[in-house]
Image 1 (tube, rainbow, N blue to C red):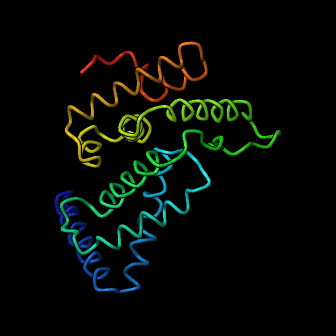
Image 2: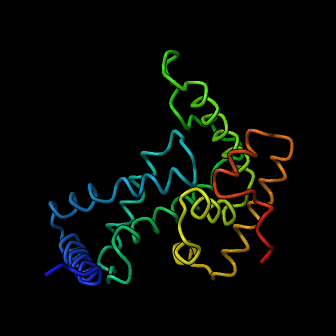
Length: 209
């Protein structure tokens, strides 16, 4: 008999609760299992919000310190993956608010070898991403986080709202305001403007909430 999606969700939820309980009891194998299972999602969430920076590995460790400090409170209302990503979101938000205004120039895409096919295209993508994160550096934390999760990570607005502990209306407003601000900065930057289109359309195309 084929396993239904609902049955898989139930099994996943039970497995998440069991793993969290083992971590809360101090099971070292369980903590390693959780770390290895969710490190990539945590890193990706931080990267989408912050871009690449010298503090990334420290931030990943900071997230998992918070994960394991609070693991006894996990009740399975979301998946462990989402729970860890939510803590990563809060960590990134705090990092934005405490950092100095000027950040280290971003290296978002590795430099391609000169002989690599489509090297010019890769370089353009790298530069476009650098300009996007440069524009995002000027946004307040609430706008930047909402925009990064919705427009770059591609999460549904309802999920972004839950992860940032905000209302759906507030989240939609933040994403819209962030897009409008980035669009304003991209008005004379064709490369950045094209990159914004690739992220799901020009910022000004959404109606104001």
